[in-house]
Amino acid sequence: MQINLTGHHVDITEALRGYVENKFERLGRHFDHVINMHVILSVEKLRQRAEATIYVNGANLFAESVHEDMYAAIDGLIDKLDRQVIRHKEKKNNHRGGNSLKGLDEAPPTDE
Image (cartoon, rainbow, N blue to C red; front, side):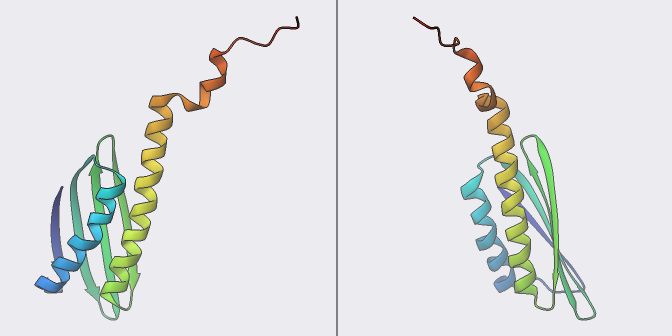
């Protein structure tokens, strides 16, 4: 999993980079097929914005979060992406596994 971290009007310190990498490991625990991530951290007056695009096998997921604190914005971003990754994984498993059509293979009960 490769993380590209970009800062607009903000310096990316080692502490900030480590925090982002540590939080994004949580996404790797839920879904192993993450190919690439592009994270943009930006500052606009008093608003701290964190946005990310994740390229997974079969889809591109995007989320953004705005907060007064950069670390809180990153936490909100991770929560949103975590929900999207879990939903994508469930959709993929339901489509492949055929769980929604499970009962159609069985023969109807007969009266004997």
